Length: 247
Figure 1 (tube, helix red, strand yellow):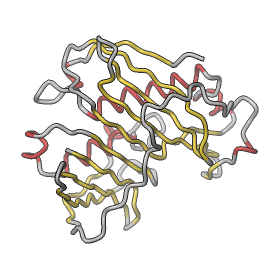
Figure 2 (tube, rainbow, N blue to C red):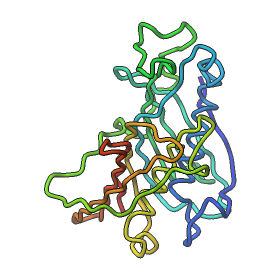
Figure 3 (cartoon, rainbow, N blue to C red):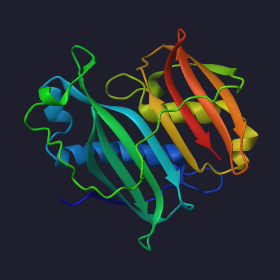
Figure 4 (cartoon, rainbow, N blue to C red):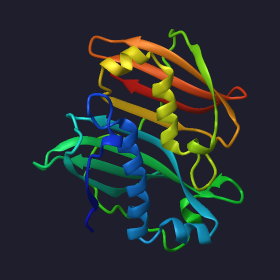
């Protein structure tokens, strides 16, 4: 089966001060294409919702391979790559006009029983969920990783964020991409404005809802090649998300 594909132009509101595509804008497009892709495969939102089931994004990793600039005409492809344990793998690629990859991503999803708020095992899937891969070609050679702040790094509470209307989606929960926005707003702003983000990995561990107060804790790490920020979101001491931002 063919990959799910979409052509679009990079709009001004999708870019940063350097006219580059924002990581959050890439993730917004990827999230919408995941919905489109699951629809095309016969297990989309409406069909799942009718059975009180839902797709929940568990982990995601993305990497820019070269700059994507305002007004660029690009193609995004996505495909279901099969299962790994309880997790469905879905990959993404962003192609430039010359057909070369400008960005890649991989994501891990689980099926959730919306009434019980618990994971559904493969043997309990309805018949319409096809676990066979749509395409086995990897955009990323590994699954989205677990993110952990390395031992020895000092964490600092950067700020708190109260979940508001603009953070929420049609489920009235915080939209996944907002966690990346919060994270980027919580680290050294001079650094963010002067250095392009190269890659990120994020784990989604719990939902947040309107008026939840999220504490945003940060840690920094410098390697020979990169400067790395970790941002952890906590609600009442429990981890909601954690993201690794590589510059």
